[in-house]
Length: 288
Image (cartoon, rainbow, N blue to C red; front, side, top):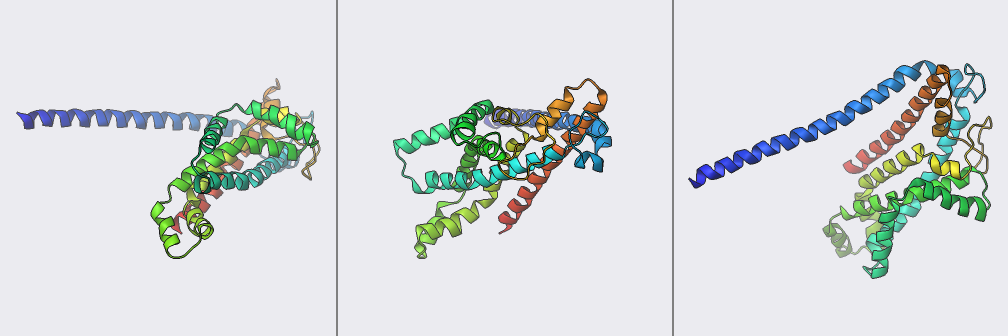
């Protein structure tokens, strides 16, 4: 009798496990299906707009001559400057909180606030950037003001993912390095950070993905709705692809919607390229 009862319990657990696994697979398949539908709609609608003139052109009132050159370069400026600012600061802050700082109430309070900042709406960071970088620092409606604002936006993500990456390194690695005569800084630079570099790059992917697709903070700090000026420096005015897409999507003519779909394809390609670079670097770090 006990064997029979345990067998029934085992069969019931296996059935529940199969049901749960099927629900997980179904949810994943549904998400992928919706993504494929959206992507296919953008590609089918906007592929015809991807011509050399489209990439070299400027926003104009003529739909046949309209292009994305200023918005494309503006997006590249914003993403690259945002990563250049947020990654060193975020990684340094995470290393300090996780490896150096003592477990005090103050540090626990800072840690809790960093976790809370990761969920703050992006428009709040735009208002903060307007007050600090645009007005207080006098950057004006420039690329550097936008990049600093976006750095504030992605900084909590970089810090939290870096901390989680540092926690994946076994304590035995650190103790072994110290036992061999290495200093704490040598252990950090030559053992801890290299071993956690692969998960840290995941934070880079998340930061780049959020920075390249945000619109609200950039509108608050002065991004132009449309411009024919190509940004050549960090103090120049700018626009970005999401804003250009929004403008074209609001036009009544279908030809503008085709242009918007083409810009969506370009934006997705940029995002996938950044992700691919980070994944390649992460795989190389994992093999090391």
